[in-house]
Image 1: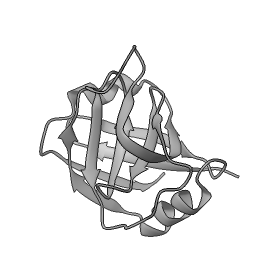
Image 2: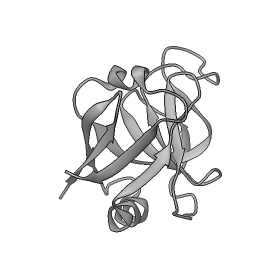
Image 3: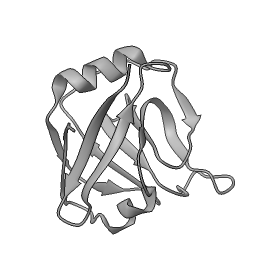
Amino acid sequence: MSELIAFRSRSLGRVEAEVSRLECPATADAVLRALPLRGRARRWGDEVYFKVPIALPEENGRVEVKVGEVAYWPEGQCICVFFGRTPASRDDEPRAYSPVNVFAKLLGEPTRFKGVREGEVIVVEGA
């Protein structure tokens, strides 16, 4: 069973993502229990990330991610949204700074996150 979450900010509007428990079930459950979440956006290439008040260990962590994937970054206690190349990329696919727990996939066009500004408040809520 999957659930939907929504990212919301002034420049982004509203973008939904489908949460999956297949790869990182404990992470998915923890994020869903903590909703709503909010944080100030940071940019790292074509990645938006923001600190959240959740402390989770690595769970099936990986640095190779795909455009549109949403992950929790244990090292930084952040939610990360990947929508293109990052400074660590070796090709056209994004690459995380260090292992992340992938728990969701954006629905719609991931490049909508390109308009998110540094410091902008992002809210994550149930959809």
